[in-house]
Image 1: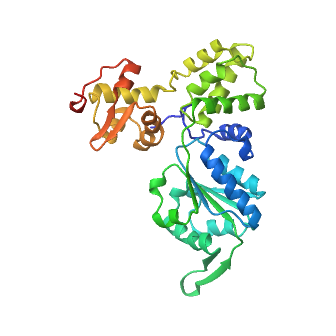
Image 2 (image 1 turned 30 degrees about the vertical axis):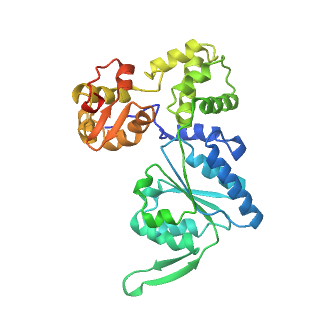
Image 3 (image 1 turned 90 degrees about the vertical axis):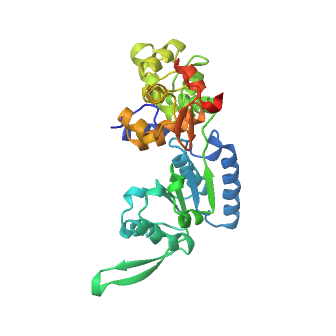
Amino acid sequence: MAVDRIIDGELLSEQEESFNFSLRPKLLNECVGQESIKEKLSIAIAAAKQRGEPLEHILFYGPPGLGKTTLANVVANEMGASVRCSSGPAMVKQGDVMGLLSNVNTGDVLFIDEIHRLSTAVEEFIYPAMEDFKVDFTVDSGLHAKTINFPLKRFTLIGATTRAGLLSAPLRSRFGMLYHLDFYSSEELTAILVRSAKLLGLKYEPSTLEMIAARSRGTPRVANRLLKRVRDYAQVKGSGLLSSEIVSSSLEMERIDALGLDDLDRSFLRALANVYEGGPAGIDAIAATLGEERDTLEDVVEPYLLQIGFLRRTNRGREITQTACKHLGLKYHTKKNDQ
């Protein structure tokens, strides 16, 4: 069974969501990182405003916590439009979608998180809404069933997904703009933390925010979450000032190392190194060894380990790298192709 992790890109609770929402930038010039995407969006927004038209439909995809929801709200703010939010799992039947679409005004943004989890029936229902801004809605059933054509006002659909590969080709093709969000550099995360610390009224010593950024797995949501935990620790164990000692002690208590790895990351790598002699090993076998869900390992653990070069994916399974073994002090089993 998966456990909550402070370094997950996923939101843990409504309190966490409220905390992150309060720190989210409202406009493009307040956003840090994702420079290429920001430039493309700024051009598209300026052009749409000049023509007096809504934006094309947009798809943001990438690991959790990188700012997909934030960018959707930023786009709406830049366009001066209202945003209506939902998620794939919440839209079960056509009536759920119809309730949203009927309340959308011209130029509004409809944001659907986890859009890859839309059911086939709902997905096919929104195709004409995206293309022709109209839907055929069936009322009643049986002999009394009839289909009514509802015209819709022109809106912008913004979808977000962590599993772009699960999107059907017809749905993907209906988005005019598709943007992949990358992990953030330590410098970008530090800039985000400086802004967050200012909004929270925190005092900090030089280099302390860099310490937090280095352990944030390239993810702004994780960086802000760590900042909150360090703030609490500084308030209870110190004077409220974020000092090097306070930050180090707080992150050590959370068992997050210098590269941002936690117990689950280390358990994953140790199982691969010790139980499977460095691999290759199948993800299902590793999940069974750790007692974790496969999806947890694939969506939460592996992306960052792949990003920092601690893990290899091969046709035969997962393999640990020599760099990972050196970091954890593990024995590296030399592969034939390494010789």
